[in-house]
Length: 94
Image (cartoon, rainbow, N blue to C red; front, side):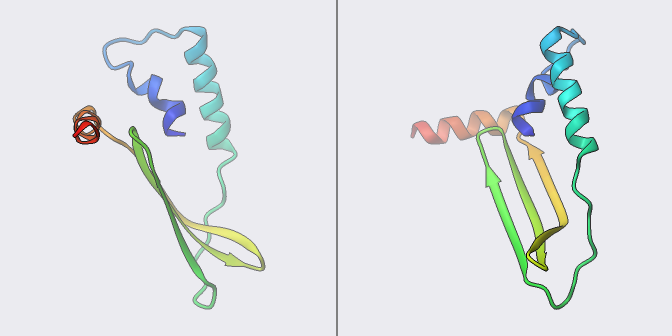
């Protein structure tokens, strides 16, 4: 999702709704509308935390498995600010 939304976040100076950005906006709306349901924690079910990171963002997914189904408790996704992205690339070059 972070990669999908990056072009929208980069439009800070002005809005330029070109066909590609309209398509991204519509896809984002669809993804949000199809978002998983959140559940209350079940004290007896196993808990799992999955994380992921890229050069542009970080995220985590906290869920439980109940009746062989993942039930989302919490999800977080954060885009990295430009300064952190630049620092990351500098560190990789070292």
